[in-house]
Amino acid sequence: MGVVYKARQVNLNRIVALKMILSGQLASGEEVRRFFTEAEAAANLDHPGIVPIFEIAEHEGQHYFSMGFIEGKSLADRVKDGPLPPAEAATLTKKIAEAIAYAHDKGVIHRDLKPANVLLDQNGEPRVTDFGLARKTDTDSGMTRTGAVMGTPSYMHPEATTRRSGFGMCLLARCSKF
Image (cartoon, rainbow, N blue to C red; front, side, top):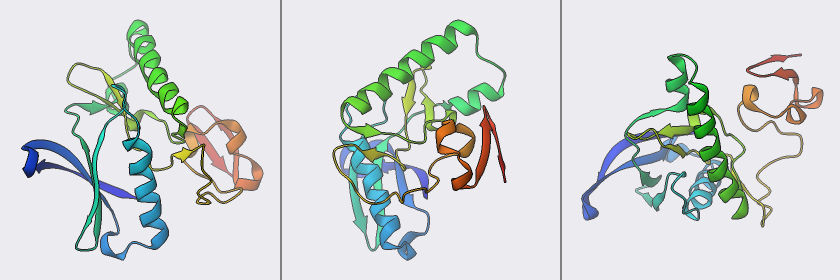
């Protein structure tokens, strides 16, 4: 849904990540609502394990938000090199779980947590990002249709991958279509 650029926030002289709607000025009203729901959900979370949102705005029809720039790579890129040592995997899992628990305590459900949405900073600390499918528990935005498949199928919980949604049994990292 979006594309992210490394940018400089001139008025504060800092490097940020700038996320823009991929379809730009051609974005539908629903795409714009989803985009701003993502930004708002993450903007209200203040936790060291979650990438902070700085600004949400629109300029000449282009919707964007700026967030902390994390120098490093994603957890997905890290595990491409091979499995993590057990102690490191346990430590990362605990820190990610604490960040997600904090989000849940604040009424935000991520709904697309996967290694590509966890960035590892220069110190190897995990930072959860991409709240594009997040849902606030205290409101019903009406943006998720009943029975709609939301998220990355290979990382969905089994209950979300039913015959009705068009996906068969989901086992760990592979889903097959009926």
